[in-house]
Length: 119
Image 1: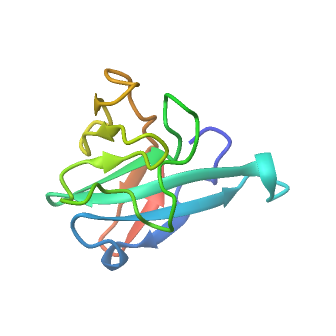
Image 2: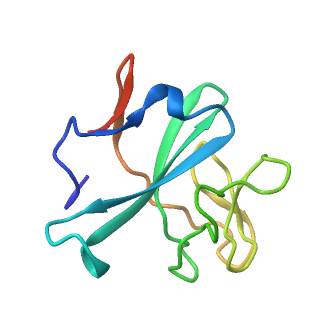
Image 3: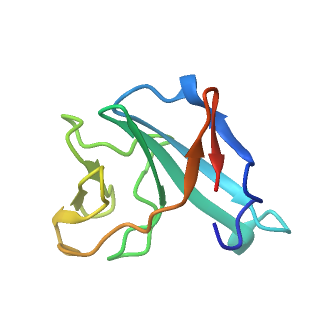
């Protein structure tokens, strides 16, 4: 990921991410605070793991308002807590809300037998 950690950096253990859950991460980009933090989240959905920048394409705010809370109430879509936009988990496309048709920015990851790592 441009400006992110080197490829192969462990982001979390695979067993930390159960299906229909998400994990928010702040990754240091050198100085490690404020604008030097890259906010991403990892999510597991139907046996696959996805990673996105934690930034709504409409308001440019983080999607979650509480740690690791990225899903809507019935866990069928990712939710922007700022204005209620919903995004498909598998491709990050907004299906409901003011940013309809726009997408979350994917983050490249690799899955090893034990870990999720930066690509």
